[in-house]
Image (cartoon, rainbow over all chains, first blue to last red; front, side, top):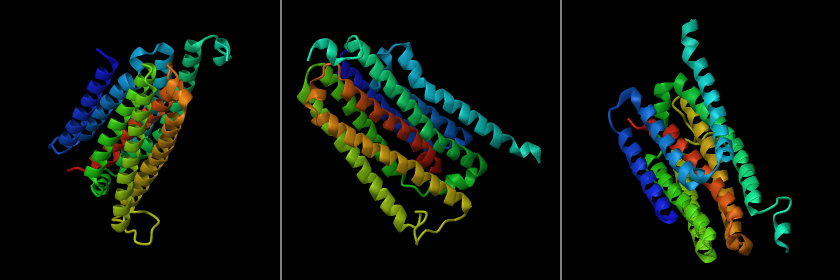
Length: 91
Length: 208
C-alpha cells in the first residue's frame, strides 16, 4: 500500500469515528456517554499518532518519548479523580 | 557544503533526523502536560458539578465544534501529505499541501472567531460587561472553555506560522529527509490531538 493511500484511509477512519462519536452523543446511553466519547477520542488520537505522526515506523525510543506525556497525565487524572470521588466518604 | 558538515555534530542524516525527532517529541510531551492541567481542571469540575457542567456545555455551539474537528483532521492529513511529498522529492507538491493545511488552519480560526462572537453576544464571555451566568459552575465552565480553546487557538496560530515558514523555505521543501517539514507536521498533529480531546470534554458533554 502506498503511503498516500494509507494516509487517506487513516483520514477516512478519523472522519468515520467523528460521525460515530457525534451520533453516540445523541443516543440514550446514560452514564456510559462520557466513557464512549473519550474512548472514541482516544481511538482517534491513536490513529493520528500511529499514521500521521509516523509512530508505526519509529523505533522504541521515539515511541517512548511520545507516550511519556500521556503516562504522566494518566497519573495526574487518576490522583485527581481519587481525591474528588472519595470526598463524600469523609462526611 | 561538504556532506559531513551539513549534519554536524552528527555523523550522518539518519542520526541528525533521530536527534531532531526525539527533541521535538520531548517538547511535545511538555505541551501535553501543559494542556493536561486544563483537562484535569475539567475532570475535577465535572466530578464536582456533573449536571451543572452538562448544562453549561449545552450552551456551546456543537455543530461549529464538530465542523472544526473535521477541518483540523483534514488539515492534519494535508500536513502528513506534505511530509510524504518532500520525501518523494516533490517540493512543489509539498508546498501546496502545506498551503492547504495552513489555509484549513485559518478556516478553523475563522470558525472559532464566529463562535467567540456568538458567545460574546449571548453574554457567555467571562469578564465582559454583558456576561451573565446561571451559577458559579457555569462561570467556572466558561472560564475553562475560554482558557482551553484560547490556549489551543494560540497553538493553531503558531502552527500556521510554522507551516508558512516551512512552505516558503526552499531548503525545507527540497530536503528529502523532510526534517523541518516533518517536525512542523508533528507539532500540527499534536495541536490536532489536543482538539480531539477538547471536543468531547467541552462540546459533547452538553448533548442530552
